[in-house]
Amino acid sequence: MPRRVWRWVVAGWVAVVLAGGAYTLYLDDSTSPTPEPRRWERAPSPSDVPVPCPTTRTGEAAPTAHSCTHWQRS
Image 1 (tube, rainbow, N blue to C red):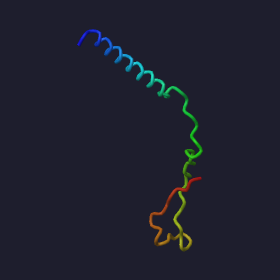
Image 2 (tube, rainbow, N blue to C red):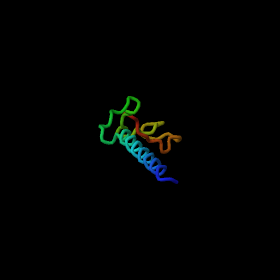
Image 3 (tube, rainbow, N blue to C red):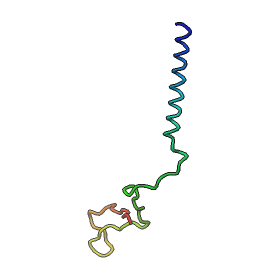
Image 4 (tube, rainbow, N blue to C red):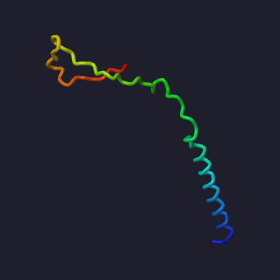
């Protein structure tokens, strides 16, 4: 290939690399402060005390409530 064609190829490659780098820096928001979570992202944290299993009588667990302890969101 003639030398002039190679110059255009190299110039085009440099332009593409510079444009890609500029676009990458434009999209990089790691230095900007993080925004507040949206309303649907702000889930309340679970409570510290688990909700006990349902009982049939005082102090006894129901027969179908085996391993039913779970945390309820506050």
